[in-house]
Length: 257
Image (cartoon, rainbow, N blue to C red; front, side, top):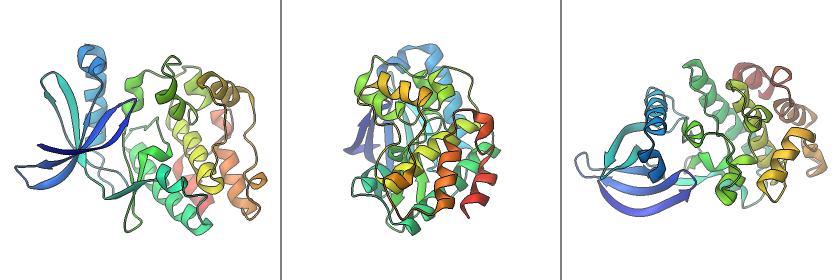
């Protein structure tokens, strides 16, 4: 691989745009933090997650080509997506409702396919959703959340973004299943629609306290033209108790459609 330039940086490592010199194609290389390479358990867990992600073959999931190591540093090779993240798109302001639904259905399709293969994302958020120039959605970073080991409150900036989308059961460090992705999907849908995160605390601990103890505000309090049905879907995704949310993406998609 020939590294071209850095395209992203966060708590889970650095992403480079690179050229695969053998196959002559552009790819994304994600180098993981050094501590993962040094910790045999974290490394094993990461490899297991990467293998699970690599079996996912769906138009709304960013394909993983390989996992490798260079001079003790682990990296993932993924498809490079020309476009921008949903986080960058939201920075321009709330999305038109037709675009909200178009993106939401594609994200739900991808997560439904992953769940059917037994893969839970655990870190669904706008920064992990890419939009290409044709409007196609690709979900990235499958399984990487489990490598972080939950809510490490000492890492302020990198965790703050992720903490805002954590389900109550993730915050409590409990065992999670696909319904944790439904919560995070609801937070993402809220943000696409209103331009604001549902839990706005400035510090990691404040956000986590809000997630555990405060009801999400109604999206219509920020945007008057939200249809009642869409608001209902968003709020049902973000119910504190997993058994009160949609139980799978199939039922969620029926409600969206």
